[in-house]
Image (cartoon, rainbow, N blue to C red; front, side, top):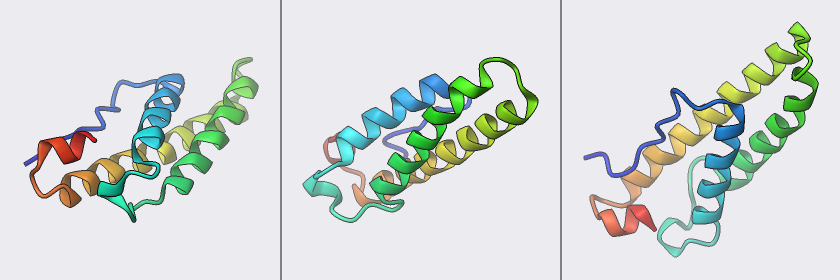
Length: 99
């Protein structure tokens, strides 16, 4: 049973960053998820890297845009994995999953 979804298919890089910040805040020191997989530090690192790649890509430079897109996909993959972890670790308890 899916309790939480990443729902990232239509999110642009800025929206991914905002979603990542929400996930990081909700998972940091959450007693229901003491040892998350992937680690919150990995998600944070991916978010920071994506944040740094957004400004250089704004001018349309193909290399910078490609880097931003790659980093965006990497963060998205981590966020989906985190949602899967939460669904698994919560054992069907919606209140735990939403904590």
